[in-house]
Length: 64
Image (cartoon, rainbow, N blue to C red; front, side, top):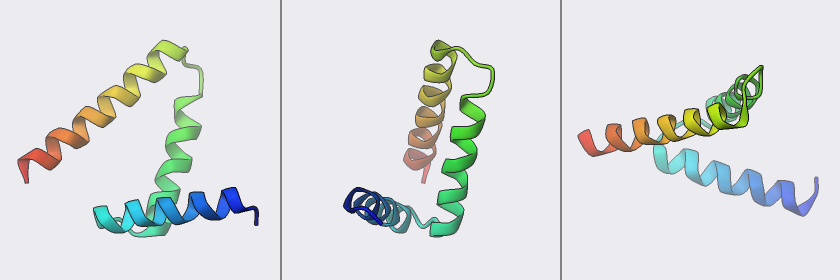
């Protein structure tokens, strides 16, 4: 495994741990998001979806 992949995996695991998301679930969610975001969508709609997703999670965190 390359150093880049190892560092990427380490960073993702730290984020998942901080957010209380199991690593396997987090990786599966990322794979699904990547696959779905690039299916028959324009770059502008992808950006909008990512912005909506980020805003949703920020609002959810503030409500806790």
